[in-house]
Image (cartoon, rainbow, N blue to C red; front, side, top):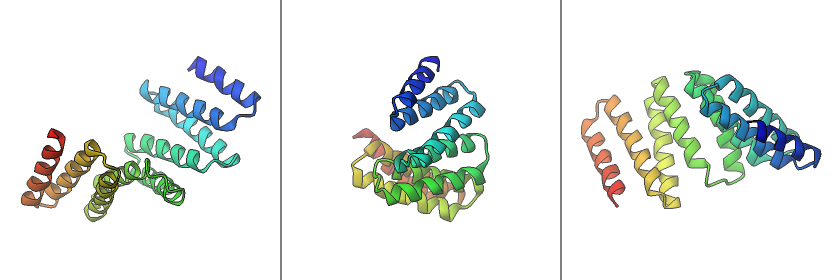
Length: 173
């Protein structure tokens, strides 16, 4: 964290705001991995403010996603959903195909936690389609497992078994 803070100050002095953004975000990530979610949240919010100020749309979407993940980890589902939906809007506008499916998957997970099974299924299916389009088998398997969880919770065991089998088949490839 100390080295990242020093690098962040240097990038600020050199007027390299995107690199400064990356340092701030990575400081947040370090705090998150250390289990200090409040400090992580502060850093991610600082990164979000910088991204909006310079402006840096991709960075804004990334920061909103990270803030949403913190809220999700802390069971603050409504706040997590608001952040993730904002991130998804930006990612779709910027056509950020790398981040869209992950954000869709997180939105599905939030809806699952809230008991909004139809919405969870919709977002998981969107993420699956995005992962398929990207040719990303490991994440396709994850999306299928998530779809299976929705099927289990909605008392559809046959459909759950089918998608679990698909996930297993993909993971064996």
